[in-house]
Amino acid sequence: MRLDDSHPEDIALKLAPIASEAAHLLRGMENALIEKRIKDDGSPTTAADLAAEQLIIRRLNEAWPGVPVVAEETASTAHTGDFFFLVDPLDGTGDFLNGTGEYSVNIALIRGDRPLAAAVAAPAMGSIWIAGTTARMSAMPETGGSTFEWREIKVRQAPEDGLVALVSRRHGDIATEACLSVLSIGTRRMTSSALKFCLIASGEADIYVRCGATMEWDTAAGDHILSCAGGSVVGPGSVSLTYGHEDRGYRNGPFAAMGDTSLAPKLDLPVAVA
Ligand SMILES: Nc1ncnc2c1ncn2[C@@H]1O[C@H](COP(=O)(O)O)[C@@H](OP(=O)(O)O)[C@H]1O
Ligand SMILES: [Mg+2]
Image (cartoon, rainbow, N blue to C red):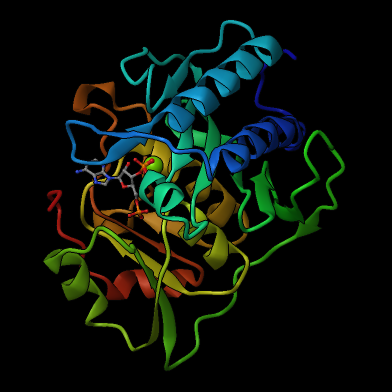
C-alpha cells in the first residue's frame, strides 16, 4: 500500500489485523514461564516483547516497504522519515508478567510529528481500538480471525464533580499528584499501559496525567485514538505532543490526556520530566 495522508481510515483498518495478530501471540505466551530482564530505564522486558516486536516489524515491512519503524525493543535508534511507525509491542510488560491483563500492543503511523493512524489491542481485555480520522473499537476476533465489528467511540463531557482519573499502577510521582490535586477527582482507577487513553476515548474515564517518564511509543497510538474520539493529549501550555524526537531518545515530557478539552486550562503541568 502506497503511503500518503489521504486515507488514514484505510491505514487504521490495515493496522488492526497486525496489532491483533501480535496481541494473540502475546496472549498465548501469558502463562509460559518467561524470564524478565531489567532494562537501563528500570522497566522489564521479556522474550514475549521481542517476539511480538519482530512479528509487527515483519508485517509493517510487508505492507509498507521502506517505511521506518521505531520500536521499543530493537529499533529504538532507527531514524525517522516523513512517515514512520512508532511501535510498543508489549506496553505494560510488568502487568503481562503479573497477570492483571492490563497490557497492550500499540502501533502508530506518524506523518511529520503527529500521528495519522493508530491501533491499540488489549487481548486480555478482549478489545481493540483504532483511529484514522474517527476512533473506533471492536471486540478482538478469535485467533487467526480478522472479523472486526467496529463501532465509533466518543469521549464524554467531564462531570462538574467526581472526575474519573486513571493513574499508572506502577509509576506514580509527586508532580502528577500535584497536577491532579487542582481537579475535583471522584474516582482514581489504577490502569496500566495505553489502555488509559482508550478508556478515556470510550467515555469510561475523564483524565490521565503523567509527569513521570514515558516514551513516544507508549503514547502515540493512544494519543491519536483519544484525539479522534474528541479528546486531547497535551503537554505544558496545552500544546499537543509531538513525535519523532530522536535527539531526546524518543522521551516524552509531562502530559495530560483528557476527554473533555475544557479541563486543559485548569492544569499546570511542569515543564521538565520529573
Ligand atoms: N524510567 C522510565 N523511563 C522511560 N519510560 C518508562 C520508565 N518507567 C516506565 N516507563 C514507561 O512506562 C510504561 C508503563 O506505563 P504504565 O505504568 O502506565 O503502565 C512502560 O512501558 P513498557 O511496559 O512498554 O516498557 C515504559 O515505557
Ligand atoms: Mg510501553
